[in-house]
Image (cartoon, rainbow, N blue to C red; front, side, top):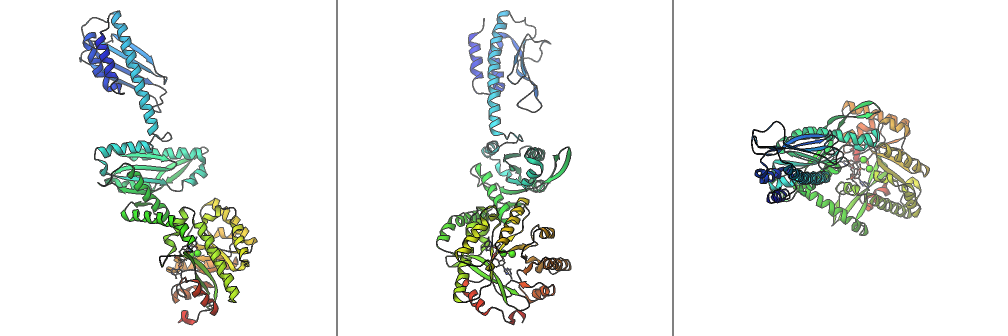
Length: 557
Ligand code: C2E
Ligand code: CA
Ligand code: CA
């Protein structure tokens, strides 16, 4: 006969919380005397496990009263689990006691049924919990899993031992394109595998989706981890060929200190630093700091103040002359935006990168183009002979299928001939973007609008690209003349020569000294732009320059 009290107690203990394994010892102890229990063993097999890739097999002692037990169990019950595995309970009586009676066996059947039901429920709950906190692709924690771990460290006051990282794989879109999405996913999984290998006990890394990861790494391992992030060697499969790959990442780092008040800060602060690293500093990593925080606040103010500034007409086109190196005539000018905010002109580097991030720069560029067209129309009306004005266009425009139509619409609105306008775009690495650029170039050519490649020599475009994609003007980046070393001289000389063979104009930017101008003249560069002649100036000042049309020998003096 089953001891009702013991059985009740057994069930009561098992239902205390979900973890049957830690409770079973006490539960069996409650009925041990009634059944003369010596030992209870659980054998668990999951050949096709959903918990672990290669299945699972373990043996656990659920209860033990005596060291000395019989060789064979007195009672054995096997259950099939939903995952295609088995659970076996082996029950041993105290050494030297008689075997279980039939009645006792029937009771034990009930007891093991209950135990199996409870442990199944516990495994399921754990599995669901784990799924909710795990990234299915890599097996790393997801954001929830990561934050759960952060929380336990925060509770234990151990979080300050770590730095937290938010990192993003560099140019992973290229890997996606090259290997296809399916293999790229496997590459991410391989990368995650390397990441797991790097971690030591107590550290944690998670995947937030895509190629975005987070990590908590001990402070003393910062340098080591940055080295890891700078390049992980792995491979991708192309057909049956193994292609070696080195994957680097850009990271934001938050040095966790006592001021940390909530788990979210570990992700939030490092994400903010990553954003700066990627878009503004353009560095492999940036540490979150007060300065960065202020910067982000400023960014938000700029983004939110933009529309109002447009309404209030606070953006102004400034003009910087382009000058013929032989005659000192003004042969053109570049329009450069200034934000006249609270009486001071704000330089574009303080707001263009921010407006680029959210696409607002496109609106600004059109605003400046329109301003330039208005100014040229006004000069024509006053009888002042204008020069061709170049307008900077962000590469963000390239995605716009109506770009050239929109440009023409503005020119038409002011009834301007296309010879007065030139568009400046920077070089690009992206293949898809190159196609868009070539397409845009074609349309500009159809409309007779000149196009220049800005900051030439700083990007990645090769001279070869120019052969297949000739533009009207190359704007040589300032860095070319900053160092006038022998190698630079040869490169520069050949660029200028090639450009002239391809009938392209070359404009040297950032010319500050007479020495630089002489150097350029020697290389037969014809047009210069820089502080040597003038800084970018407001429309009225430039109008005065236009009236004269050339510089005196001041520059040569
Ligand atoms: P950028 O297109 O390369 O413009 C040339 C920059 O060099 C200008 O800076 C100009 O003031 C500066 N500069 C000219 N001569 C000299 C010199 O002799 N020495 C030195 N050190 N600098 C010189 P600015 O006006 O601050 O503009 C910075 C950048 O902001 C521009 O570089 C351009 O990329 C962007 N930008 C300016 N206006 C616009 C705009 O209307 N639209 C877009 N999308 N970008 C713009
Ligand atoms: Ca420019
Ligand atoms: Ca430039």
